[in-house]
Each structure stands twice: as C-alpha cells, then as structure tokens.
Image (cartoon, rainbow, N blue to C red):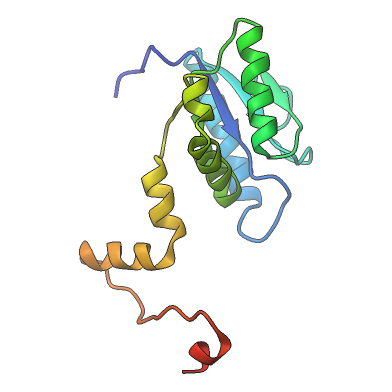
Length: 162
C-alpha cells in the first residue's frame, strides 16, 4: 500500500498504567508503530501517562507527553501542536488497548478530532463500538460464520444464576 502523503504527523495514544491485558504487548506495538512511522518521515507525537514504558523513551517519538489519558490532555496536545505550526494530521488509537480506544472514541463523540482536522487511522468508531459491546461482537461473529461459546448477557445476580 502506498504511503498516504497527506499524513505528516501522527498522535499515538498509549495504554497508561500497566494493568492486566494492557501491559508489554501495547508498549511493544506502540514503540514499533512509532519506529515505522518515523522511518517513513512522519512526525510522531505520543501521549502516555506511564513513564515506565519503552514507548515513552524520548528516542521513540519526536514529542512525548507524559500526561493523564484524558480528553483535556488530548485537546491540549492538539492545540499546542497546531499553535507551533506542526498540526497533528492523524491519531492511531490501536496501540493503547481499551484505554486508548475508549478515549479516542470519547474525543470523537465530542467533535474534537473534527475541530482540529485529525482523522482516526487503523480503526473507526463503529469498529470500536462493535468490539466493546460484547453482544454486538458476538452477533458479528455469528453473522460471519465464526463460532462462539454459548452466552447470554446477565444484568443482575439473579439473571447470572439462571
């Protein structure tokens, strides 16, 4: 696939604190994504609230922000980079697991990506919604012929016992 020359700067959103399911695998994938993007001549900006990761090493990105993973932090980064004449063109939320995906979805719903002319790459909000909603995901798997374990959603202890 040819390089998209309209992308000159990418924001990578990290996974934050190390928790089960969001540890070294996201740190590794994020650092590899940063390396690959920089090899293509793309400016890499990274946000992660966890300084104890490889991806937050200053050699990994052109600019590293050690800030809380919040909507306010994202907007601050977008404003700062735009004011400096180095606007961010795209965001890559898939390198930070559920934390990054949910944050990027929230930023999208608030219209912030659109406000700063930033597009999401690697995933879209509809895919995030499907992956985060267990029933939607189960139904998608059934629709495309992928077997899944029998399951049912329980909204109470009583429903769970049944």
